Structure formats: structure tokens, C-alpha cells
Length: 218
Image (tube, rainbow, N blue to C red; front, side, top):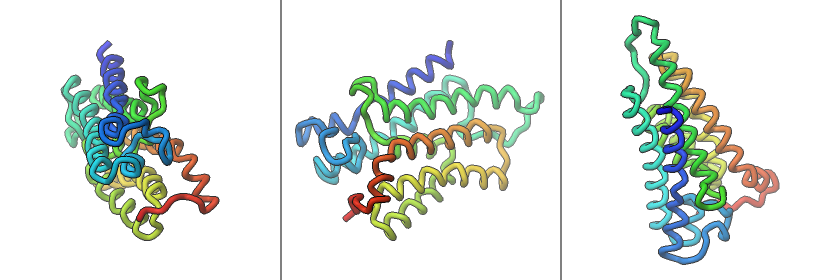
């Protein structure tokens, strides 16, 4: 019962449409009728200004982090694995950690498909950052560098987001080679699933990138 409740709460937390609410309160109107139609920070910036975009970014990241922290608190588990091998070889620890991985994916799904907005939300990037800052901060730091370099070179935020998202599982894998952790299988699975979801959410951007019509960051 607890695992299902935690995952439902994570989804509902992810469904809080901060970008939509901020635009409603400042510029007015439905953010989903602007630009890419998403409720994330980039689209909010286009409609309500950079300050509103930054606030949206922070709040979306915080809800991702909060979902993972809440799940770890419920199951009394450390946030990013452990070096200690339990008497059962860590099988019980790893099994329970799958619930945290489930909450991590659920909060991103909630952001992308919020029940309050007819399942039309954002693209999950900021919420995913919040999730993995808690679960794998080192991987997020390196992925952040990849994101910045990609945007600086190409001026495409969407491309930077895609490349950054798919690089997180790679950096988690590399980190586990250096310092093996019991939570590695559920965490990298969550990272792979989250990365695929974010790429899926950017499918229209990918089409515009191929056609050369994607908007550049200025």
C-alpha cells in the first residue's frame, strides 16, 4: 500500500502546474497557447519574462526533489545508495529502492501529463534536474556542463535539454564504475526512463531542429 501511495503522491506533486499558475497570475492567459505550448520555464519566459521563467524553473526543480526526498523518508532510505553491503547482499535495500525510483519517474510524468490541465504540461527537464540532484548530484553536474556547452555552441535550448537528459544515465553508469553502490540498478533505470520521456516530450522540437526552424536562445 505504501509504495502505491508514494507514487501517487509523487505524480500529484509533479502535476502542480507552476508555470501555468505563474503566467495566469502575471501575464494572464493560458501558457499552453504560447510558443511550444509547454508549461516549463523556457515557454514561461517567452510569455511572462525571464524572472517568471526563473521562478518556474526553481519551483519545478523543487517539486522533483521533494518527491524523491519524501519517498526516501517514507522508506527510511539514504538518497543515493550506500557503500555498505548488508547481510543479504543488499537485496532488500535494492528492492525497496525501486519504490524511490518509481516516485522519481512518477513526478516527471506528473509534470508532463498533469491531471489538472487535461494531461498537457511541460517537458520534464527542470523536474528531472530536481529528481537527480537528489539521487545523483555528480551526474547532474556533468550533464549540466554538457547542457551549457551545447546551448553556447548551438543556441538551441531544446537540443541542450535533450543531450543533457540522455547524458545523465551515462554519468551515473560511469560514477558507479568508480564507486559501486547498491542503489545503482533502480537509479539508472529511473534515469533511462526519464531521459526517454524527456526526449519524447521534445519530439516536436526534434522535428524543427531537423527542418532548421527551431527557435534559438538569445
